[in-house]
Length: 235
Picture (cartoon, rainbow, N blue to C red):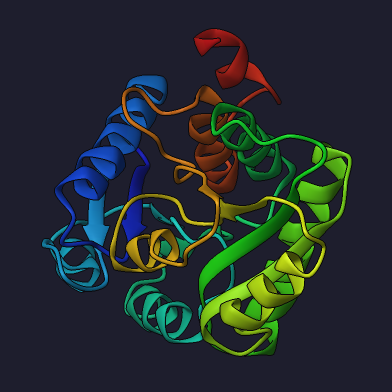
């Protein structure tokens, strides 16, 4: 019986965001022919994760398309997985070096310069584990970028994004916001309205998803037979 990978995201009302997530799911499907790959959502879109799990059988792996810990979403996924011993929840996508590398790519695409002040902004952090993840993501981004990165959070705990931007502007340099969001949606839109000089695109941009994101999703699902196998096949 083939393993089924359930790629699960929050869901969004943004058509651009929906298209980007669908492209990622399709790319994962193409690179995992030995598995059945389906999508599911925890809110906004259908099918719901609970319905997908209830309507399927056999070994299933839920891959959360989350960039940091999310208490409510993690609780929901674990509750759904607990209904069937053949279901397990993989680690979230982030934080990870891959996301930092793509984040730097988005900075370069947006025209960021070494002289700019960089503020990585996360849409949401709902507790200490989430803030720890966001802070780690900023450190990874800083290491790849080669310069300091400030952190701001739109909703939840941590430094409010308005305060982070005020501190950034005090350097009297151009302020560039690095959007720590997977795809366009309500949270990403809020980041785009912050009034920074430059705001990067989400990690999932227009067109085909970055091959490294596809590899990362499959690594989280633990279905790669050889480390780097998928990445080497699609670069």
